[in-house]
Image 1 (cartoon, rainbow, N blue to C red):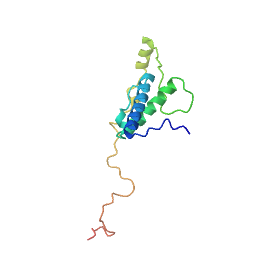
Image 2 (image 1 turned 90 degrees about the vertical axis):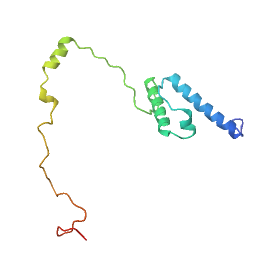
Image 3 (image 1 turned 180 degrees about the vertical axis):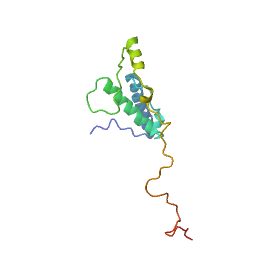
Image 4 (image 1 turned 60 degrees about the vertical axis):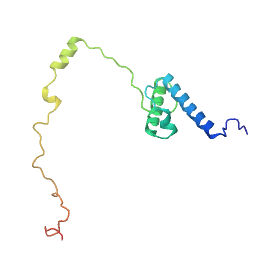
Length: 131
């Protein structure tokens, strides 16, 4: 069995682990992940959610670059520009009826009481407070 990768000195092991985290973060930056965690977040287990977010961002970036394997993280949206003429924009504005957007000025639930009334803690079966 090959034991060349094991480091016996704990100080050297800590340095090597931090170097590996730095290499991973450097790769993430080169690959296009804009926001990533800092080394103590992973090494000292300070902010695990930041680490998970970085891994999900890396998965999303891999999908957008054509990786076809298992996916982790949401797919990054592609640009989808639409070109409308001025006449199309004007026709869209003119065809809009104000109330189609909805309103809540006229609707109210005041005065409605469905089902049982509000139960008050401590109220007995005769309508008196328990002592």
